[in-house]
Length: 598
Ligand SMILES: NC(=O)C1=CN([C@@H]2O[C@H](COP(=O)(O)OP(=O)(O)OC[C@H]3O[C@@H](n4cnc5c(N)ncnc54)[C@H](O)[C@@H]3O)[C@@H](O)[C@H]2O)C=CC1
Ligand SMILES: O=C(O)C(=O)COP(=O)(O)O
Image (cartoon, rainbow, N blue to C red; front, side, top):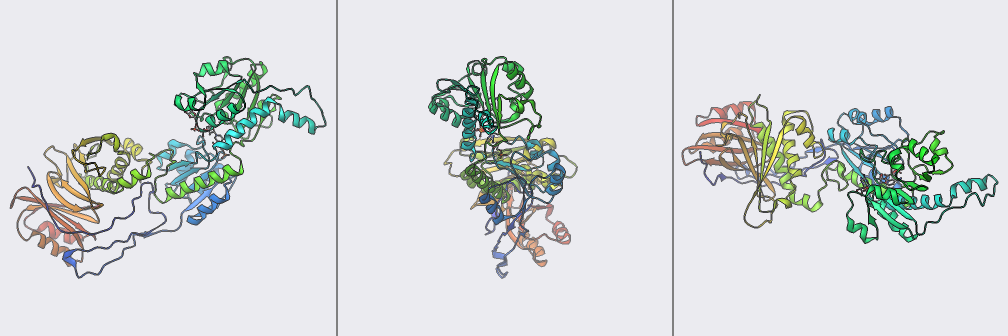
């Protein structure tokens, strides 16, 4: 059945409200001001609708944070600074918090997310390493994790260099002996750095700053990092080498990789055996990248001459730790990021990221969600709303009992597929598909995970259109296969439920249902009626709704041919009573109808 090309439509005028990508529920004071105008209801006064106005969010800060960051947080939220909480105390408090800010000393375990019972929306790590946060659990609970990846880079690099030089010249041991009244000049003869080879393991932000500084000390610097671009290394005169080559040639090894499954205990019995005898090791990364027992053995065997450690597998390490007590080891209590400057920097960086995330903005330092540049997000914003509404509408068209398993999303755009980032759109369609039929809250963080968990397979298809790619997208279609519909006209010729939408003047519009073309703004709620096309239908439906003061915001009729079948789409601001819907269904020409909440 072919539908007519141009649906008839009446007028709408309505500003769009803010798009929330990350929030579960409205959080801070959110004012949505809606002014409606519609020809058929000219006598109605303009209205201002306050959508919601909730209390301030609560942010728990569980470790010391710089003052400037705290002040930023306090402008927006209630801030609870509670340090040294036990795991049980943290789990108890967290159910009353919308955000949690930690450093390396707080374990944000699965239990923390479970105890939050859905309230915790963002965990901010005031620093780089997120190995103390259970990322999988965060994602499963739809909780965004953000970090502050840049503000402590220089501090960590400077600490690495401080440990390197202190170790080479026995500064810590010599200082302790002078304070103990000794004067052991021949015992503390050190080694020179100039001309020695330093292997930087992990050539990221800290690693490359260490390399730059070590070159300034006259060292020959090599680096191992399977993911670092060679040109970045060449630019500062560093050669990238294999792991084994780094171990075999280094006089000093400085560790700067994250702690991951791949880097856990990467220095172990086997790898110590590959090192040059007398090598010296600096670790400002994470204790877990070294097998600490193996390090003690390697020191005892003379393979490792000295080690300078800022980080430990368990922090603080045991008082009688053989490693810490070894006279060839110098240790600091995880001080890499602890400069006044770095702490003010990370505090501001994390406060901005957490406040932004609580406002529903996308964070550029998100660890478990797509990072989308601000200008791409601005462009996609109306399509984000459209995507969610299409998903919401499509799933409500499915007849009860038939499970949605296969959804295809088609994006038609004149932009090259690589220029269109659909991750947010897919997440919002998923949100629209799942939320109306479950109690789960979906956001950008947990959308893919939740879809997979529910056996919902979402495939995406791009259609490349001719023409000017001014807008990122022309239209989005959502197809649901292998289901029955409670509105048979929503099933297209291909046997799937199809809904299609476009953005017009910044407002999402429904432009197709099944094979019928309509044009109705997707705000408020929607009544879809299939009827025999005949005069007076709009009036009949309109007056039933008008009788109970239900405001019609938009009407559109898509028909196969004059006086044949037509689908009428009616946008309403208020929910009509069951009685009114029944009366619409009883209009003689109406063959089927459905009421949908957008
Ligand atoms: N002690 C302290 O207070 C501080 C410690 N850190 C730690 O320093 C480390 C580095 O931090 P950033 O440089 O900011 O991170 P980054 O992400 O900029 O750099 C990490 C680098 O490690 C590389 N890498 C990943 N797997 C590797 C592997 N198997 N072998 C070699 N390289 C690998 C990555 O490609 C990346 O280039 C992290 O573990 C971080 O937690 C950072 C700041 C302060
Ligand atoms: O940023 C990092 O990765 C750090 O290790 C710094 O840890 P901290 O914030 O000082 O507990």
